[in-house]
Length: 100
Image 1 (spheres, rainbow, N blue to C red):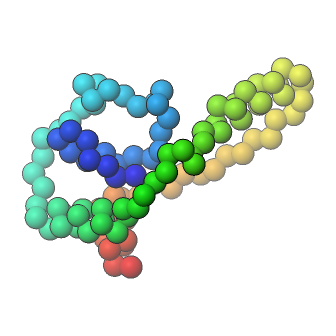
Image 2: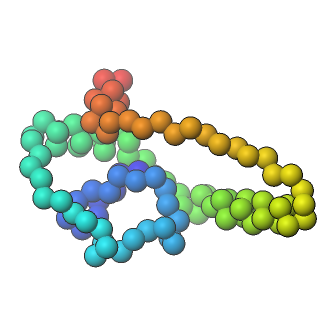
C-alpha cells in the first residue's frame, strides 16, 4: 500500500496497529530523486488508487497463533505452512506495472 505521510510516502504491506512505529523512530534518508522516477511514482499511485474499506479487513494471524499454541499445549500435531517469500526490486516492479 502506498500512502502519503508527513514529508514522504510509505510503501508497506498492511500492518496491524501494534506493528506500526511512530515517525520519530523511522530513519528518513536524504536523497535526490529525478523527474522520471517521480513521474513513474505518480503514475503508479494513480493506477493503484482505490477505496479501501478498513471495516471489511480483519486480522486473523493472532487468532491462528493462539489456536496453534492451544493445539501444542493439548499435544496435537501442528501443520507447518511455510511460504518462500520472493524479493523484488521496487523500481523493476514499478516499471513492469507501468508497462501493463
